[in-house]
Amino acid sequence: MPLKIYNSLTKKKEEFRPLKEGEVKMYVCGPTVYDEPHIGHLRSVYVFEVVRNYFKYTRYKVNFARNVTDVDDKIIEKARLTGTADLNAATAEVSEKYFDLYKRDLKRLGIPDPDSEPRATAFIGPMVELIQKLIDRGHAYAAEGGMGDVYFDVNSFRDYGELSKQNLDELPLEARAEEDTHKKNPLDFSLWKRAKEGEPSWDSPWGKGRPGWHIECSAMSLSYFKGTFDIHGGGRDLIFPHHENENAQSRCATGHRFVNWWMHHGLITVGGKKMSKSLKNFITLADILKEDALFGGEILKITFLGTHYSAPLDYTPERVQMDRQAWKRFMEFFENARQAEKGGAMPSEKRLPGIYQTFREAMDNDFNTSEVLSLMHGLMHDTYKSGDTVAQVTAASAIRNFGSEVFGIVFDQSMSASQFKPEIEEAIAQRIGARKNKDFKTADAIRERLLRVRNIELRDLSDGRTTWRVKL
Image (cartoon, rainbow, N blue to C red; front, side, top):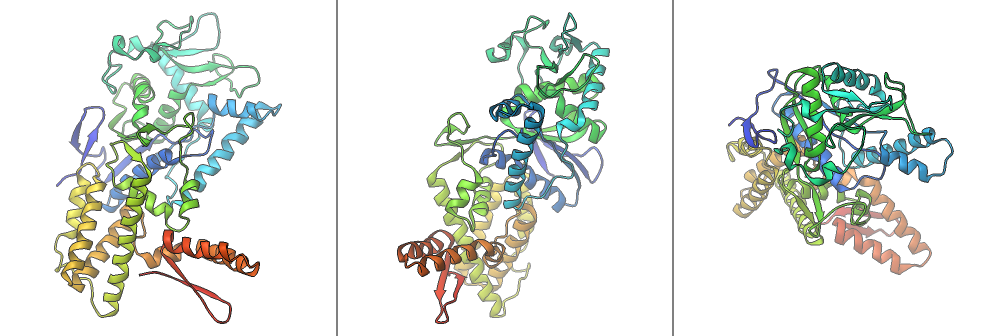
């Protein structure tokens, strides 16, 4: 079965055929670093990490780029709030601070760096060149009177709206809200913004200023891939106007197709409401790790995997509890499989023929991770119920290998516990300190929480030491 991917451009699943046999070029819109990331941002990163991993698993060479927007209105506004006199320096400090927090969360989730992670401020030159090319080809214009602003002329591109499937007369009112007397059309969008006093700016043929948001990704992706590339990814909220504008300016500047596959993931809601900073209903990885420092990150991945990447995901306490129980079943299954291995059972694909092919067929259907997860649960249930220890260790081996290589999850509980050993030992140290202070209520609460949330059982020895193990 060939890999089929839903293409937001054509609105259908299409058989994936890379531009170059055996190679995949992927570009994904990354963070605008003005605040701490929430799990909506992490879902985006994880979705495309799984896609990247699956291509590697199926023997593709992957060239994966994910950008960072490090100059933006929101970043500058956050810098103003610091009260620092030097706005340029404050903007750089703000972007660096939140970029570090973003990287911290990815490290906590065990997500490696992309092959390329371009920052917008490092590509000002290519952006200026791209804007000039658009002007030369009649697709952009500088504002009259030497104001320093440059706009893309949407009327110059007959296919504008091909990605979002909208025409100019039917575009949302908010798209027309940015009235500007220097525009030919209210829908024309900014490519270069004239400098404002104190704000970060760069030299250009149109005077000092900074790039508009949309031109960034076009310049960076074209700089890396030198033409059409295979996959461009991001959230559904980026289809319009960001990706629509990116597609238009890129096609107009190059004269050829920009991207072959546009992939968009669904957004996260909380109790049915959009997750956002303004509603103050956003959830961070730090929030999750406060509740479950040992396996919180792995359980979050299970949550992401349980819903198809293209669908919205409603994050609720009930969903969290369900996924926590699912994780506990994995842990129990692997402990039973380990005991079976100690008893002499060895994996044999003859016992479960086609097990890896079944996983692949689900993934080949537009990266259907929820189906793979269901298959894994079914394998655990059926092989354990059968009492066939060879089948159990075979299923465990397949889940362990596929889960690690494609999902980036250490499903084996003993390996997971070792991976998070520092967190366990820190909790034990806190408990020992509480006991020394005769705060037995806190000490008992730490023990109970380790057992209830993390499935870790403590044992106090006569010599004063405390040991731990994963409870069966």
